[in-house]
Length: 284
Length: 279
Image (tube, each protein chain N blue to C red):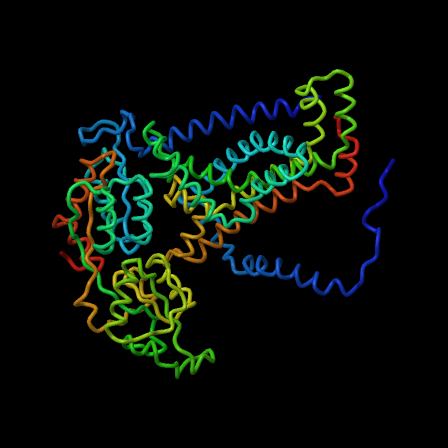
């Protein structure tokens, strides 16, 4: 009664130190550079489950969830951790900062190049898919956008009193593959639309269009296909000639390099390529 | 001696309610709007998805550990700080307050510069086999960084306003510093400690910027509720409803913590004066 605080403080100390040590152990070794954890063998010889961590571009979310499910079905001793999807540039920054991953799939070659230059790639990256940029608009294309140039035409048939305003456009930031392609295409067309936000990944850009906060978004064709008709894709002239090439590679400090290589091989295999095609990706 | 009722002390101009009311509405209306936009029927389904449960579990565990660490580190810091007067004390107090005025993103960046690959301590830790960034431990560290000031300020404020006589008397009666601390100082701090713990916990729970920078956003490992909300909101197809439901969870936890935390002001003054030694 006189020193409940002493007991509380003592208990807190023990708890804090104990749990922090446990967490550092768990967090630190679940992908640390030189883990001595024997439960993660680097082969598929049927020993305790190997965990595979994949860092993939945001536009790959739907197709890679499918591919990882299939891979996990074919390899029962492999457990695929929840894939980290984000803008390729964000992922590259995290990898260079020390984030643990076994496989990295980016949405263009320059981003993969950054990770290569940081000497974090084991072997050579392999191109596994192509993707084409489109303009995502609301279903039914209410503003009648047919090309990039239309993004600079004031609205004439708007319903909410926005006549005379330019359509609100969103794209990805330039360092994100999707944004880089968008800027190249805009420059080639000599067009400067009203970009109200530049997001860090393509899913966020698409979400802004789906929420109705923007009239048009510069995203990939495959992204619009995942929306189940909640958005429409308008083809951009010349986009098909300048697709994004997606490379995939094994990360250098992977805890499971054999499994990672197996996954990369699976993605470029016939079955993997068929799955990619079914989601709207061009094949290598 | 009972203190006078502070609530009816001095009259203020009635017109003060105009800006005061505007400020209050500004804080209240967005929350009300959020609650109105929630699809209440869909909330249980959203909150029981594996991703949401993992985020909740991770948030509670990491915030709990971070708060415990804040107590262990913050109480001694506050006690020592309260004894320092003059410019040195002010300097140290400013250092402690930095995470409050810096954007949390900058805090996360700073932690990365210290403990990341190529960081000041990072390389040394890596050579020992300890990788910290982008792990669950990194989440805890980021949360401690932003929540510690809350605890220190809360406790230090109480220390400075507490009546020093009790401690003098204890010392005069022959108690050693450790005994004074244990039997007089710490019991006096209990209300401030409770409120500091509540504030630190909710701050740690709601931490986003430093976590995103330093720990990343991997589901189950480092994706706390705020990161889950951000991901859900930016996730086409998953979108707004999930984000709103997760936000609701945070609002409820924050509300409960705040309501439980605050003893009435007059009661706090009384407790401070009595020092609660005999509790």
